[in-house]
Length: 114
Image 1 (cartoon, rainbow, N blue to C red):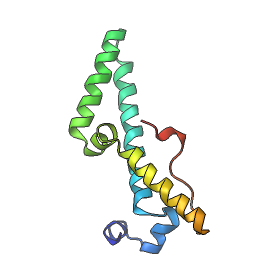
Image 2: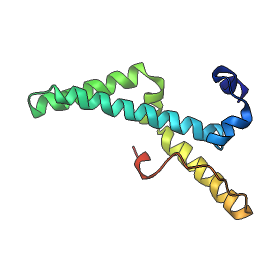
Image 3: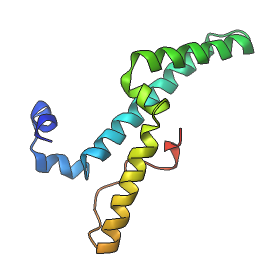
């Protein structure tokens, strides 16, 4: 964690005020990348004149993003959001079972299904 916190100039304890774990930060980054990808797709589709051009724009843009962005590749090819969300859900269930519930906000919700 110190590699991350040192770069942004905060202490590790400050990091944990925002995220419960490295996995929550990673999920937040993945969700941000996914949102950026959807914005890119919307722009590409907006320029299309026909349904066929829309489909081509979606495929071309998606494949381009998957090839050029390792995080997008992890999202769409490896199903990374599902894996991280499942891991976080298991951790939360364990914490609830032991009474060690966290106070921080959850960074994922129903929109994480890809």
